[in-house]
Image (cartoon, rainbow, N blue to C red; front, side):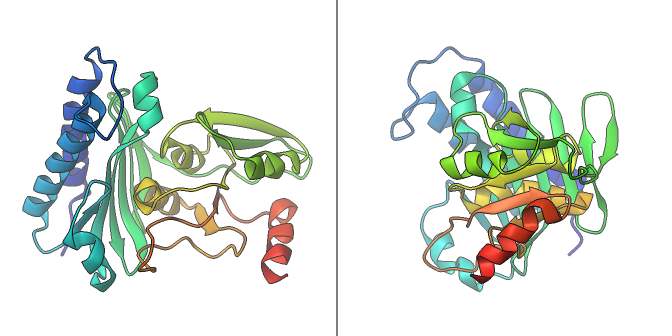
Length: 270
């Protein structure tokens, strides 16, 4: 089945519009265990995307952060499915800094092959399809994107870090490079910064879930970059374990560079 990525982009934007109607309200309660505006934003986006995908591709199942029931038990039998995060960047939504996204990915044989990352507060869309390139779309233009060249050994490495939380392992990784500049960003936008060449590395040395990364990983790989498990440096893959949907640690990069990949390779074989 051929999938029109523009239809997926339109669906992500529709979900984003629903989120923005809630985001622009004044609200004080953020506890996702109740009927707060944040939960309402998650769910309205979830229902919009699930319904839209059911119409667009009725034969492809959907797994969402907000899924309940059979999806989580049946998923291991799926060779192709949609993986979505209806609202990625909870803390950024609460802070109202605009750095939250709608993530829609198509997974095929454990690999994200198509991805759309929409930033509703900024009207920016990153999208890509493996073999077809990756693109950044604003209100006024669409341009193809690609990762930056690997810095020289004595060059400055622009490293993406979470705006809300940086682990001790991340700080140790960054300090091991000769010259670093930390680029703070929220949500799946961290991966997109590497995809478009605005950063050189994103070492995620802390917990994430598969729906957090799949869409942006498709963009990175379509752009020509890599998302590699740490420390094995094998490609990050999806839906391979029955007991969890958590990702291992990973590195987003143009390609492994001797300055940091050799120590990781040694650690993996130790």
